[in-house]
Amino acid sequence: MTLFVKICGLRTEQDVDTAVEAGADAIGFVFSDSPRRIDPATAARLAARVPESVVTVGVFRREPLEYVRSVAAESGIGAVQLHGPEDRDYYAELATGGWTLIRAAAFGDSVPRCGELGEDMLLLDAPVPGSGMAWDWSRKQVAGAGEKWLLAGGLTPENVREAVDVTRPWGVDVSSGVEASRGVKDPTLITAFVEAARAGAHATG
Image (cartoon, rainbow, N blue to C red; front, top):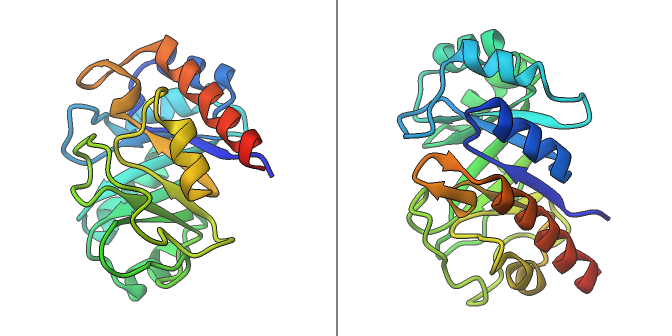
């Protein structure tokens, strides 16, 4: 199976075009407080450039349900990624909108399982989510084997191949690791990341 690769925090037409041309399976737009934040209208314009084969994801952090619904509908994204304390009822309500649901969880003592709250995919982030800091992927079982889970947190073109080899994830997610400066993506790094991630997947497959 081909490794699922998500490039997150895209803000410009060049960002989107580069990620698509590099072979990314998903691209993410940030709607929470961040240097990468964009508004729904900009996301809608960028999402319109994306082929149907690539998943467009909206990233939210501790937002009210109706806000998430409104922004997701206005931007035309295909998936919603949630970072926060949302419970099963929240996911169930959001599922009625037809979006693919991604639950982001921080690496900790317990092993999260994809689908625990009704999500379609699980994103496993560093102990301090959004820090861009690499963490010790090899300490223990990271997530449920054979589940749809993405490894995130501190990944770069230089370390993603090793990370894939060690953890055997279903997919990987990157944002700051492909930036020239905070919030500004580097086309060369985006392409290099996708190539390195897939090389690691082929080596372990």
